[in-house]
Structure formats: C-alpha cells, structure tokens
Image (cartoon, rainbow, N blue to C red; front, side, top):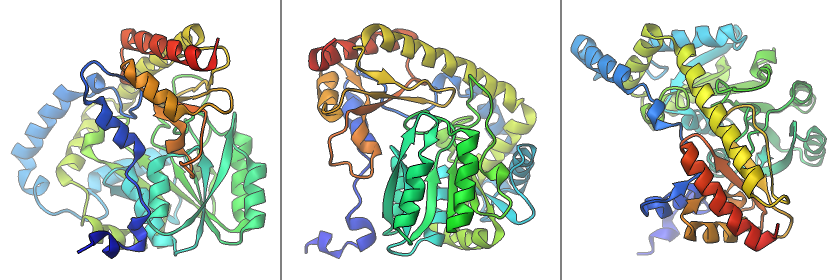
Length: 398
C-alpha cells in the first residue's frame, strides 16, 4: 500500500520545519548554534519551579493530575486576564483562555476562521510555525515585506486591493521573528485602519513582547482594538519555560467559543500541573523582576553579537538592530544563497537559520539569515561570529 496516496490535502503539501531539520545537524559535539529560538536554559528558575512542583503535588495532587477545564486553570486564567488588563488588552467583548503553547492558539484560531482558499497575509520573512498553520488549512498565503519600522502598509493595501479573499493578517509586531524589527505606532494605527476598511482579522502574535531591553514600549495592536478584530496570542515559553507548554489567547467571545470546541478535540485541556506550577510561581515570586533579569542578559548578548558582527563580518553584510526579543536578521549582497553559506559555515562548526526557511516560497534563493543570541555565551558568540566572518569574506569578499 502506498500510504502517501492516502494523505489529506491538508497535510500532503506540508514539510517539516527546516529549522527543526537543522537541529538534527547539531548533534555533532562542539557545534556553536545560533540557529535556535529558545530562551537561555541557565536562566530557568529551576530551583523555584522544583519546590513549587513538589508542593503542588503534595498539597493539590488530586487536582493537578486530574482532567481540567478546556478554558484553563481558573486562577492562572484570571491572573493572565488581570495582567493583560494592566496592558490595556481585552474588553467586555473579549475572552481569554490558556493554550498548550502559543502555537496551539494560532492553530485553533486558524481552524476556526479559515476555509480552503481564504487569504492570509503574512510578513515576509515570517515565523514558520504560523505559515504552516495556515498551509494546513489550505489557505492562500500572500507575503508583505518587512521594512525597518515594520511591515509595508503600502504593499499590504496593494494586496488587499488585488485580492478579495483576505481574511487574516498575521503579524509579530514586536521584536518580529525572524527580523527582530518592531512595527512603529504609526504603522500599527494604519494596519487597524486597513482592517476596518477591508474587513479582515488581525492575528497579533506577541511571544517576545515582554523581552524589551532597549527603546520605548509601543502599544500592542490589541490594546488599540475597539471592535474585536485583533486576536492576541501570548506565551509563557520565553519568560518562564517553553517545556511547560503554556500560552494564552485573548479574542472576541464568539470566536473563542469556536476555538474552545476545537481545543476540546485537540487535547481536551492544557496540562493542569504546568498551569498550577506557573500560577504558584507568578504569585509567590516577582515575575517582573525575573523578566528584567532575562532582558538584562539578552540585551548584553545581543549587543555583543552585533559588535562581533561589525568586527568580523564583511562590511557588505548588514544586520538589524533589535530592541528586544531573541533574534536579529542579516543580509548579504543580492545573489548569494544563504543555504549554501550555511553548509560552509556548518563545516566550521557553526549553525544559523537560512532566510529561505522564513519565506513563503522557500525554494527561491535568499541572501538573508537569522541569528539567535539568547543561548550562546559571549565566548561562543565571538568564536562563532569570527568563524562565520571568515567564511563570509571568502564568499562575498571584504
């Protein structure tokens, strides 16, 4: 039997995340990886979480190990609602639920809204997990370029004029993955204006928003949303632990009803033990002090990586200058293939993410690549960037 012939249209065109495939190449000891997207493991509050887990199981084990409600553990859900409220997120027409990571929230919302052939506009470059969520629902995906202050609103409106099937705009407006760029307030207002004019929904994915280490905060799209057009996705992965698989969604109540039904089909509920541990952590400890520590470390590592790039990379290879998050984006002169460069760099024991993995059409040649600065030490950053610089100078010149 040819099993591939049995695959549904929803999955037969999907490919494994190229970033995950790159990880398989990193098993070789001694590889310096700038390819990941994970928080620094040494900053996990391991001792505190271990003590909390022990207490929760000893004192509330019957609850922690039992089925839970689909919408989420009520104390944690209420805490999230209050935190969002302090950020002017959520109105009387919205509801908030806990999800199994931010990725599940995107998938649930996409399933609840998209029919085959519906249009989704994504930033280009964009997050591969978001792209695959829309591909798996047979959506038509259109790319809008990311400029130094966020997506091009002019190009966005061109797409909206050309296509009458646009239902969703997907954006990581703050510390975008992979570029690290933050959308300006002016562009955020324009995006909301266009959403009203052309009647589409905005997916605002904000997993990195708490990780600001420079510049001034910019209001979220959701905080300026008065009609329920913005679906807001958040996560504990980057501020507490990705392994706990905790995210949340704030969206219009009518949409949330559909998403809850979809979640009941997917996993019934998010891990109760993880939710209870997270709630105890944010109530026993100062979460903002913990986040401030993360920002301090990531800010130093980001600056150090950029300084090393300025020192060792060819002058023709440029990089973004993030004010937060986990990534920066590099651009070589036109015509150079970052996939081929990656192979050369891997031979020197260093890894990064080639730009093609972040694009809608990943078969084309792209001269860009993503760099993660959160997990490597300063000595690893300097050694890795120096090796990359030597390869880049060999390929593109000084």
